[in-house]
Amino acid sequence: MLTAQDIKKKVGEQAAQFIRQGMTAGIGTGSTAYWLIMALGEKVKAGLDIRCVPTSTHTARLAREQGIPLAELNDVDSIDITIDGADEIDPQGNLIKGGGGALLQEKMVAAASRELVIIADHTKLVDHLGAFPLPVEVITFGWKQVQRFIEQRYGVSSQLRLKDGQPLLTDHGHYILDAHFNQIIDPAALNTALNTLPGVVDNGLFIGMATQFVIGYPDGTVKTLPASRPSTAE
Ligand code: 5RP
Image (cartoon, rainbow, N blue to C red; front, top):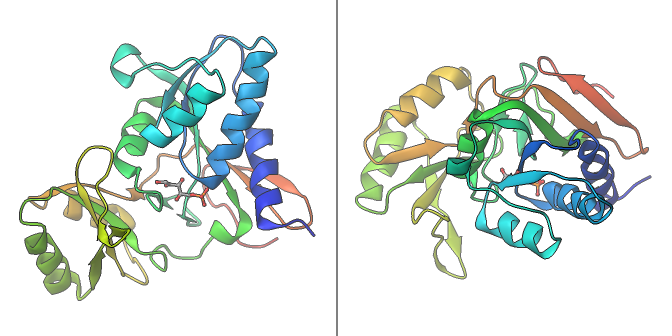
């Protein structure tokens, strides 16, 4: 049986095959995307000519260390493919992302991409989104009003995300509220409703954005699944 790290490494390395000569690729953030970046670094050293749009400053640094050529989102017309991790994947292929705090840039890069390939281990496949706390990125001004609204409207508590005892500041200078929905009945409606709330910059629901899934299992199997209905069944 593979360890969790081994599974992440396997799916990250396998997904690196999707990025081919001459492509502009979005590269994700997190412990699974780490292995994608390592594999891409090797390929670049071996002659693969690509440019990558990073989804966070952390990913940008890692990629730079590996010698991967980078581009700003503003400097590309479109992105051929983005490969990124996820915190939860429902049977319709909707996602919760943002466990690493990079949801805003991740969603912008994904939105500019023709394909979004999600790399994850099988534990990320769920019947309903929401057991993983939904990250809601808010501006720092008046954030408690947003927290109060979420509590009143949905009966859901949320916590300001902290790092080393201080509010975590995202790459773009915002806070994150982690909202405990437990079970999200209508992810598309919630995504729209949250994003119309003054003070909300974006939230971690990715609705209908993923085009493919690369899912790893403890027995070493890696399955490539289409956009809809990734199954929780082994
Ligand atoms: C970062 C993300 C990550 O993709 C998500 O948290 C999954 O991370 P990991 O691969 O470490 O489980 O959305 O904002």
